[in-house]
Image 1 (cartoon, helix red, strand yellow):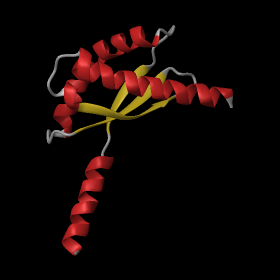
Image 2 (cartoon, rainbow, N blue to C red; image 1 turned 90 degrees about the horizontal axis):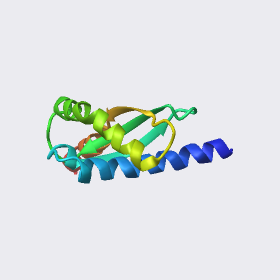
Image 3 (cartoon, rainbow, N blue to C red; image 1 turned 60 degrees about the vertical axis):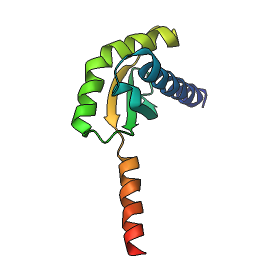
Length: 112
């Protein structure tokens, strides 16, 4: 129970700090538009899946390339903010939920 609470707290901290790092600390106009939707940590806190989305209409591949380019710098800045012994490995995954919601909304508007 305590471990689950610790993981949820770390997930929340990582999501907040990653958003701040990408929007304020790294100077890239594409990276500045990304937002972190969720973070899922492994039980040993060694690996984090970071789900992100963007308001830009850029292709997913282009966004992924930009994130991968800055991945090391993002992890380094995150480690300094969290002040933990070992920063988790970050795996960035584009979150399609916003795109899916927009598609459903468009379909529903056409049906009316």
